[in-house]
Structures are given as structure tokens and as C-alpha cells.
Length: 474
Ligand code: FAD
Ligand code: NAI
Image (cartoon, rainbow, N blue to C red; front, side, top):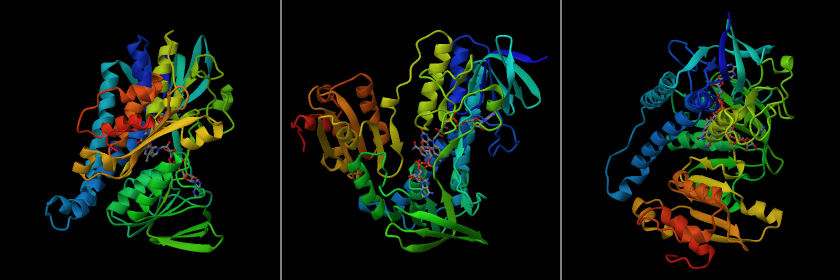
């Protein structure tokens, strides 16, 4: 006899586990299946998906440790703190990262218990429709559910002819688990993972070279932010080569050799001790039997959904990295809540236009809404309010004066269209901008809000004032 549920969620990442919890809160009987043990010592499937196991959380743990190390080596002396030459214990750093991951992934198991979500270990795949629902094979058992939420996420994109062993040639999993600081680290792809992981290993002492195919650096970010970031990262010793074409990668013994054509058309060879491949991610649909049941995919292999997460099959929904939109954990979680609520007859919504982007380098980079280049292309008339962190007392006290806040608002209505931050705590500061965008606020609204002093948030306040040419402290 098959187990029956109102809802079966396939995949236990941020899209899947949040969908399961919210659906259970709304009164559905819910199961969630997950197949990946990641590095669970007992080999049992772990919840949390890419984000908790080999993505957001472990990368931020390593970014934090490497930042502290770098500060101890290069920042403390300026503040009158003498510590001698710090040493990095990579094994201890990795053990701490693993403990953070374990605590969070087991926490989700606890949340499943609390919300009465049944965890079914195993790979889920569609068998076919059944009376008013779907039959899904999970491992050796068959489960029936009235609704299925596919939240199978994404996997790293690999390059043809470049075998990833996660020792010499790494994707995100290997990049987060190196046993020692490589002397020479090569990274193909100067996107978010390349910059974050490049920063980690650079701060710990590696010589880091990033090879990027696009001619422009951080093309998705505002052009001013990208320019400022390129200058700062170059000073930090990240060697970023743009406009390259990778011709061949040879991994032999304990080193890797990359042949590429540079921007000027010259043939180059880069030798390194480790290579990280960070050239984007692909949706996980293999093994779902999508074709067998007629689940429609789009031109990029993602599950095709409408604005509320419905697929072309009745009762089948999809959320997160496996559907269109930014491949971000908070976007997956928003969609998860939306789908559960729509399923319960409520008015769930998702709003891509206000999804914040953050790159956790130092300084951090964060933005929400339109970039200046997008506004120019669209022919929108806009005003710019731009204030450097160097004009802020708190930033000065912290010794974190790099970067700026740039606010873009409609020249006629004053409505905020985009906010771009490069600077300390940009990841936290961007929340104010997201709130403003979500509620359709004007720069005048932010200008009239009382911001605590001394805080970095005053840079946002001043940027709003600067939009009307009345900044008080710059
Ligand atoms: P996933 O997290 O990929 O989870 C899907 C789960 O489904 C997986 O555990 C998989 O094993 C399971 N699964 C797949 N197929 C099946 C099946 N058939 N049956 C059962 N289980 C299945 N995003 C941010 O917002 N902020 C960050 O700082 C950030 N940092 C990142 C750093 C790195 C190094 C990486 C790689 C990603 C990062 N991301 C970040 C992106 C974020 O991890 C993803 O957007 C997010 O995890 C997507 O959630 P998801 O639930 O859609 O998919
Ligand atoms: P990405 O899309 O951010 O960057 C990939 C880069 O590789 C691009 O700049 C692309 O032009 C380049 N590239 C592609 N093919 C190439 C080739 N053959 N040669 C050289 N360069 C090539 O993808 P990334 O860094 O792999 O990360 C995947 C996703 O994970 C991100 O898009 C993001 O959604 C998510 N993520 C989010 C983080 C955050 O929110 N802070 C952190 C890390 C990942």
C-alpha cells in the first residue's frame, strides 16, 4: 500500500523544506523526500539542499573566518592591536564550518518534526497520475499525493573536457572543502562563486587568478559598483582576466594547466595547484521522469511555471533553482511560501523586481531594483543620489570606508527605482532599499525617516537626501 499525503515535496533545499513547512502550517498532510546525504557521516539524506550543505552557509562561514584572519594579519595593527603573525589551521576552519552546517541541517529535521512533516529518504520520480493526484516513486516505496511540489534545485555547470574530481579541479563542493591553502589557485568564471571563493583563498594567502569569458566585470551589477569593485579586488590581489576563451584544461598529478586566449587574442597558459570551476548552475530535472509524464521544460531545461508556480500538469508545482528567475535561496523560499499559500486558496505572490542580490566579498556588494545602465537603455529619466562610506562617522570608526550607496529614483515621481551598495554590511543595509521598493517609496520617504546615529544606515539616508541635492554630511 502506498503512503498518501496531501502534498509531496521533492527536494529538501530552501525551496523544498520551506514549502513543506508552510504547507503543513496551512493544514495539509505533507511529506518531503530528499536523496543527497552530502557529507553526512551516516550516509543519511540531509536537509537544507545546496544552500545549507555546499552553498550559502558554508561559504559565508569560510568568508567570515578568512576575513578575521586577514584582519588579524593586516588590519589589527592600524587599531593598535599587536598579535604577531597569525597562522591558519585549515582543518579547524573546516571543522567549524562543518559544525555550523550540521547544526542548521539538523535544525530543519527538528522543524519538520515540530510541523509534522514526514521526511522520506530517497530520490523522487514521477510514476504517473492517480485518482485526483500523482504517484511518485521514492526509493523503494510509492507515495501518492494530491499535490506535488518539485524543488529539486540545481547543480554546478561543468565544462566539456574538464573532469571535476573535487580535489584538483573543484566545483562549489570542492572549493568549500580544500584541505590546505593552494599556492596558486585558478578560477574559471568571475561570477558570484568565483569572487566569494577567490576572496576566501586569497585572504588565506593563495595567488588567485580568475578567468572570465565576458568582456565586462560583474555585468549584472550597476556599472559604477562594478568599476569600484574591480579596483578594490585588484588591490586585494585578485587577478581578474576578462574576455578570455578557455581552450583546454589539463589536470595531471598535482597541478593543472589551463590554456586560454586572452582579450587581445594572445595564447596563454596558466599553471595552478587547484582549479575552481564556477561557470553557473543547471536545473536538476534528470531522473524525475518529467518527459514520461509530460512535465514541460523551458528552452533552458528549467521546469516551466506560471507566475504562481503552477506547471502544465494539474496539481504539480515547482519552485526555486529548478524554475526561472534568480538562483538564490531567498527567492526559492519566497516561491515556496507562495505555492503553499496558493494551494490553500490564499493570495500568494512573488516579486522578482525586489529580490536583493548580495556578493559577500569585502566590501560587500548588494543591490535591488534597476541598475543605471538598465534605466538608460529603457530611456527612463532618473536622478542619482550617491554618498561614499568615507563620509560616515561609523564607517570611519570601523576603518571600513570603501565604497558608496547609490540611489536611483524616477526624475518625475521621485519613486525609488534601484539601490546599489558597495561597502561594509551592504548585505544588511540593502533591506531598507528592498522595503522601499516593495512599498513603492520615494527617495523623499527615506530622506524623512530618522536613521540612528552613528550607523552605516545613515549613508542610505544621505543618498536619499543627495537625490534632492540636499545631503547634509557630504
Ligand atoms: P537546492 O538547494 O539545490 O535543493 C534541492 C535539493 O533537492 C537538493 O538537496 C537535492 O539533493 C534534492 N533533489 C534533487 N533531485 C531530487 C529528487 N529527484 N529526489 C529527491 N531529492 C532531490 N543563494 C543565496 O541566496 N545567498 C547566498 O549567499 C548563496 N551562496 C551560494 C554559494 C554557493 C557556493 C552556491 C553553490 C550557491 C549559493 N546560493 C546562494 C544559491 C542557493 O544555494 C540556491 O539558490 C538555493 O539552494 C536553491 O534552493 P532550492 O531549494 O531550489 O535547491
Ligand atoms: P554566475 O552566473 O554568478 O557566474 C558564472 C560566471 O562564469 C559568469 O560571469 C560567466 O560569464 C562565466 N563563464 C561562463 N562560462 C565560462 C567559460 N567557459 N569561461 C570563462 N567564464 C565563463 O555563476 P556561479 O558563480 O557559478 O554561481 C552560480 C549561482 O549560484 C549564481 O548565479 C547565484 O545565483 C548563486 N550564488 C549566489 C551567491 C550569493 O547570493 N551571494 C553566492 C554564490 C552563488
